Amino acid sequence: MRKRVKLRILSREKDQRDALLNALARGIVLNGKIKTTEAKAKEVSRFLDKQITIAKGQSLHARRNLAKNFSPDIAKKMVEELAVKYKDRPGGYTRITKIGPRKTDGAKMVFIELV
Image: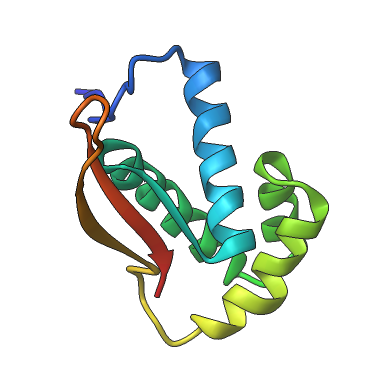
């Protein structure tokens, strides 16, 4: 019997959530490190790990799959730099470091970075 996949909703509809994850992943790929809430970081970590694993495929099909979610320059960077960097690593390409609550609303803040 088909079951649903557990996923954080992040108080957004699907298209908004997809745009958020793409933007966070883009920031991590470009800058190497971003500051965000813990729930968003955990979800973008799942998303980015899957995308880097696709990039490790080094095929035209992999590039086209990445082009669905990212701009051409980011997809190129993922295939040419990140895939080579993580070729021997089976997974876990991101690290989440807790930095304490946000002063305004007490949300748990973290840094998420590429290992």
